[in-house]
Amino acid sequence: MGGVPALLEIQGLSKSFRTGQQSVQALRHIELDVKEGEFVTVIGPSGCGKSTLLRIVAGLDGGYEGSVKLAGEPIAGPGIDKGFIFQEPRLFPWLTVEKNIAADLSLGDKDVRRRVDELIELVKLKGFEKAYPKALSGGMAQRVAIARALLRNPRILLLDEPFGALDAFTRAHMQEVLLDIWEHNGTTMIFVTHDIDEAVFLGNRIVILKPRPGEIRGRISVDLPYPRKKASAGFQEFRYKVLNEFERIDELAFGEAGAGI
Image (cartoon, rainbow, N blue to C red; front, side, top):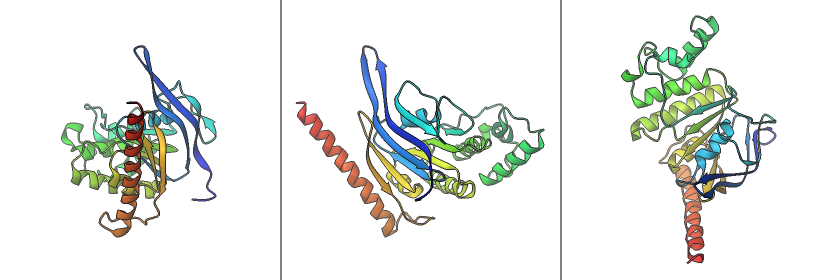
């Protein structure tokens, strides 16, 4: 994506947390640019700071060192320019699908009504507009959450393991739905996962984090055309590249642990 300016610029990002009398460093010296329209997957073992990184970009966490800018402006807090999808859909159980998507906006507004209808079509929930969350499957509920995040046309969509609680079949379907949305809207996306196949299937680029503290261990550009076939030789080639990076992370972690013995 040469020549496309960076939408998100992260420079020298470090973040620590206090736990009792101790300070635990979650992220260290993160340098990352994400271009307009890119789909970046962030992968790493548990405890590597993936979710912390996403929360900082969303403006939900502060108190860090370094610089985080969106469209050239420092991120000072949450805003409609940043959509966030959690692992759980977090729907309002007393609202229907269409009202959950509209959230605090009125469906009586013609523009809101039109946009909600378009998003219901986009996330393939036509016919479920009046349904309540208790009547939805996990995948359907997550599609409502995605539509709600897209309603305000965010510059960037941040997804924190949104399909982690779904069964394998539903997860695969949701990956395809998300790619349809990305290709239709062109929204810049950062998707956190611990699943290698998911990272390769979705991303233009894979960012690999090592744990304790979280540092970028590798960056892999995935030039496979969409739609991708997980059984193809090209897909497996990229999968092995990611696996090799994880083996190097394990070797590094073992070496550091051994040095402390």
